[in-house]
Image 1 (tube, rainbow over the protein chains, first blue to last red):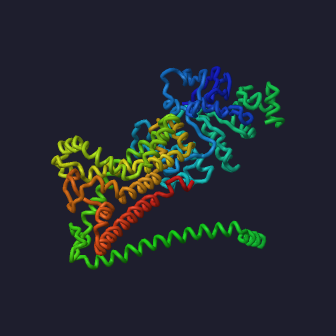
Image 2: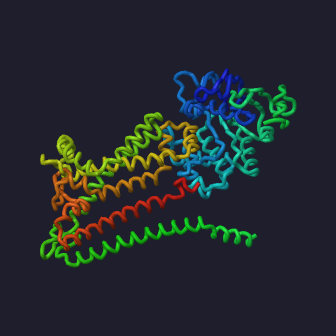
Image 3: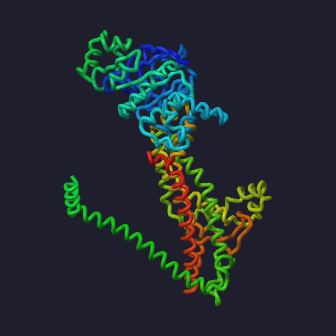
Length: 259
Length: 319
């Protein structure tokens, strides 16, 4: 089930360095939200706070609240492991497990936390998610082959299938197409459009056309200067951000005047 | 286009630095072959002389009387002692070393990890005769308790029967060898564990894996061939270890049913113990046993390579 995210006064640190400061916003359920902004503005860091991956980095910590359908991800007693089960992630570089077959890559998340599935159940889940990732027809005859043998675009779709197989509520995508060629990028964008009915999707992208194409809402992040924390400048419907943004800095960035 | 490329290649070949370096590295490669061949030929010739004069069966005789006339000797006891003590060493050292390496690479805080790395390297720097002395003077008198315990619970199997004699047995040798090969296995596996791609570990985390599950899903499978290689390095050392074994073991040309019983012999230990008193026939016989050790090591390495090669496409090195 797609869920809504509410972020309240979130500040993220690397050690003593503030990467992002005082971010308050919400992410609509069942829609695609794009994060755009210049390099170093903290959009990837912010994305990683949404599934508690930020704290995996040494020195990474967070102040503020992230509510997933009113449940605080950073509340006392909340297990980061279960947060990451409900909030899935796709990374910048396709990273299928090199030691596993295509099949095992998709099934990888299902075998965690002591869960047991019957072979037939697993088969169904693997097929369903590979189909949903528009990859089934390309790999159905070589499910036992290593996932690392696929092309970059196929690997990324495999990673999306792996992430959706555990049925998360939210799917975070950290520049999922930046390592891919235009055709593969298009395939991923089609896929995002298809997936948004079932998941809340947040995508970080450097490519503004991509943000305009795939997202319903767009958030623009910026930083005052190098070394300063990144801030949320504005978030609005994608149409509005690209046609008629409320803040001058957004317009400057979108029209290519900086960044 | 091709012409330019050819000309560029010619020009490169003419540079003296390139020439010298290529000659040097090629020379080193050839030197390796020459050395290997020299060792193999030397061993083979002397061994052939000895084996042709052997009045016993070289493979099955439980005796080593190479200086007698006619000479009678066989490697059965040596092969048994070498393999058994090394297997014990591996059975103990590989899991423990993997654990230490994982602790250093994935569990310990950075400063603790650095200290541990240093300690492991220090352990590797201890000369083997020191291990031997420590084994003989410290370990042997203190093995009684463990031996009694093994005898009490597993004595019925026969291989853990113990009669209270001094613990100068293959078991003690195996334990000592385990400690000796621990550092090399630990430091190699530690480096391999550290090379597990961060992106794969993050992928596992993002799926909701716990730290142990991350290790099981990414670090261990990724490091599989590295662990095997590290273990082979350790095994090589265990098979060939001489001084420590010679100091601890009370040698006898018998195959004991119990691993805890005093006695037994290994290839390297036997060579070291007998070489000084051996006549020319005795030396050739020892060399013949050395050839078997050499072949055993080759065999073990070959097997390891096979295991690694069989799953090469899944090793992560292709990606």
